[in-house]
Image 1 (spheres, one colour):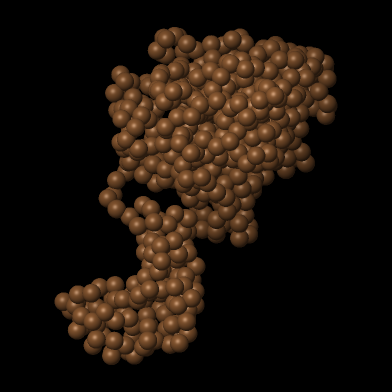
Image 2 (image 1 turned 180 degrees about the vertical axis):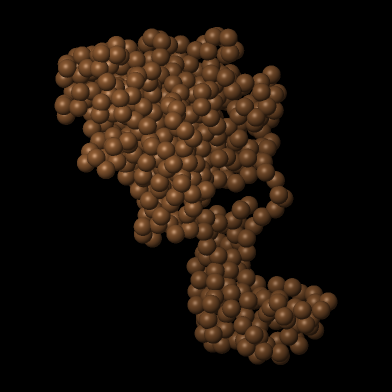
Length: 618
């Protein structure tokens, strides 16, 4: 049966890892080749001839419709062993040349359909040196430890996001993705060129086109995410082809919630795929928080992925993440150093401190980051403002690599492929771990593998932690999964299981049963504890988090006095919106003052988790 090239390579013509747009390769059937004896005689005399006149009129018409300029044997020399060449079909393999830019995948499919004459029609792939890295030639790349840490800045080798390994696979197709820099504006720079597209100024309705940098912050952020790489100049951003959309929401280096919310909406309405907000707000009113949340939800529903700085210096209090990062639909990013340590007093270069807290989901290098500034200059800056565009840039790189990835896919794909730092699993400083661009882009080829689960991802409903009819009184241990692969090919060894924050045996998948083409039932060897998260992961291409700690109101993976405070704030209209399953402590199907008393009793040992396995709090 004729075949043709397929897969992600079809998206990248005429570049490393892609295929030629100037020709295809066809292998004729033996019966077809037998009719080319006259052509072979002419070809061996060195005459410039084309075999198509000896082939069928249908073959000639089809290649003519693709404007084929020449069909020639792929090898001009004679074979040392003609019989072996014939045995393996090499003597009936041809190259059909076409004008540059031809849709050769479609052409290969059309030729493959001529099954009476063509055995195989395919693309001519482009590869090269088996390098596992792409080190760009930018003059100051050596200062960018976040991309490739060799210890050059006094840090720990490989304390980086593995950007050079990711670039060996993909550097970002030009113009396929737009990054909104929702900030102080972005000034023109040689590192941006024509990729700095029209933006908007929401801070001043009278000059909405004034999008240059009111302070140097936005330009620095933009360079980290998307400065042109391998151009013998300055630095290399994470993705080299993305459009940069400046959305100026500040007047100088400060601004209003309403301006930022307006900027989020404007970016989502004008085609931004990902958005970066290296901003921090504290002590907001309920109305401000709601405006932020509504704008973020709007952008999410428009398909934009948002990445936000956790904030610096614990300005809102120990363990407090700044707004808008602490809200939903905005992935919160904390910062690390060149030694892969959390940026704090004693670890950062100037003693600045990254915020941390229950909303942090990922960390990235943010200490002493070299990037672009106005007037075609460069400088070092530090902060979670610098950590965030590393994550944003990776999201844009992934979106360019696979345009079918949704905003939720981008977020989950990035989180699922971090390098775990700090305590095992999630913690409130590093989140799930430090960003790794290479792991994420490798996993993108088969993402997502797990598309749904029962119990659902991220939480089991607090009111149903086990089978209420009594058939499974000890808790969950069976999970139904929907997968984007052939379910019958899965085996227990394909899954990794982690338990975070609770004892009770090492979890693993004991059995797996395909219940449909894309559904499986997974049985664990131990019960999913309601006191902690259990992470079920299909290699690096999909994960489900199951379980929770009842009474963990603020979501920091432990129940303690801070949960009572969060619950009091929530009931008083001060805190963030809370999921009902975490705040309904007494299981009354409503969050009321009685939940505060119940939580206090549990913390003081005056109550129990009955019917939650009588588990005790930490």
